[in-house]
Length: 252
Ligand SMILES: Nc1ncnc2c1ncn2[C@@H]1O[C@H](COP(=O)(O)OP(=O)(O)OP(=O)(O)O)[C@@H](O)[C@H]1O
Image (cartoon, rainbow, N blue to C red):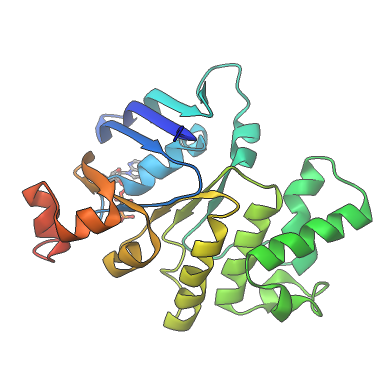
């Protein structure tokens, strides 16, 4: 199957620190792809390169090619804001706009893109909240501030906000690390449905989570992508002894 995202020889530096080294990977549409590895190995740095978030990081430099539907997202004439609409992001800590209502949070990206029609906005809001498995809990509270929801609901609100603009890819940076086990389980359950509408790349510290939710797993160490493959292969029969040592809990 044709890749939706193709990374070729990607290097990322912060000044003299070579944080990601010559990483290549192809991502198939409609899959969940986990990035795992010990703290500081470059997972988040790599993830943030995939929607040009490093444009906003002083001293960060990305080289190599990152092709979205065959188009290099770093070409000088490509608009980073347009890329971030096509490649959405959910962060570690839920970050809804605190004073905006639930509905305004969800449709904020659509409003920025120029959508004004109230019926269309409402329709898009309901669709995104349903996709994020939050509609039933908030349908009577759409006018309350986003900050009035629980932590787990706020994270699903952020997922809905990211989904509202119908991104081709959703980047998730440890999306459950600030949540309790029950909220974590809800988001993990949600991912199987989300891949029907988008393609997911998720950074996780939690190997059990990677095993539960992902189709492919990539193991990073010291900025190198040591090994990548179907999640079952990586966890059952890794080819590289460093992957094996990590997944057996011998370091990290
Ligand atoms: N904004 C930054 N400026 C300078 N160096 C950075 C910056 N962000 C990360 N680094 C460095 O880049 C390397 C990779 O960090 P990164 O956050 O990508 O690792 P990680 O695998 O996501 O770690 P963790 O699992 O702890 O989040 C580390 O050496 C880190 O100190």
